[in-house]
Image (cartoon, rainbow, N blue to C red; front, side, top):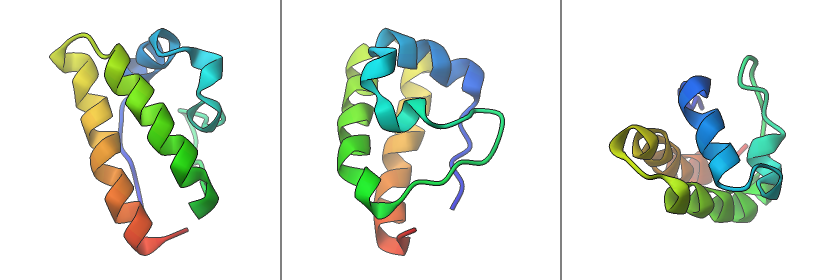
Length: 79
């Protein structure tokens, strides 16, 4: 499964949301493929909530919405 979110849009938002308080998102390299396991999902939900709270405009809300929409599909398909 792929999540296509531009790093240029997501990285500033991650910094605004606490950067190092996002251990799952922080481990992903925006310029290469990353892999997450099913065990990462609860923490990833928390991190997406933090991104959502930090998003201050529609440009920032776009990558958050894409990430949020990806989560249920990933839960269905698994690793």
